[in-house]
Length: 98
Image (cartoon, rainbow, N blue to C red; front, side, top):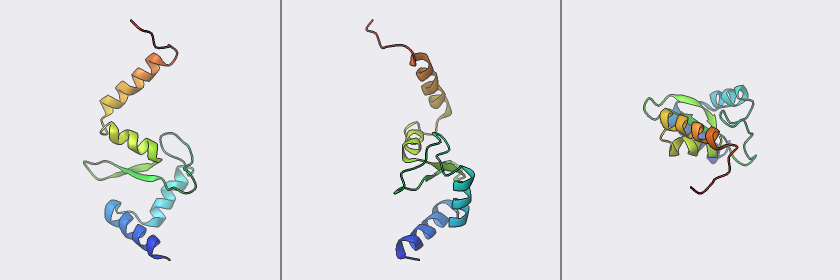
């Protein structure tokens, strides 16, 4: 095991209290895909460990884009629901000038 892998193991344990085996089990349970968009990550990237910033509890593994989206929404459910409603409202319409 190289230094980079040793550092990753330490970081997973310290940051999320996860072992590499637990991460791998999560990955397998998610079919090696992001828990939100269900896409496989780029082979050169790992899925990010998503966690509740208030409790520290791990929620799942996400691709970079989905992880950043939750971050930009500040993990706020009402804002996320509003974004979904907005997308539904405008999914078939073209934008029009008033």
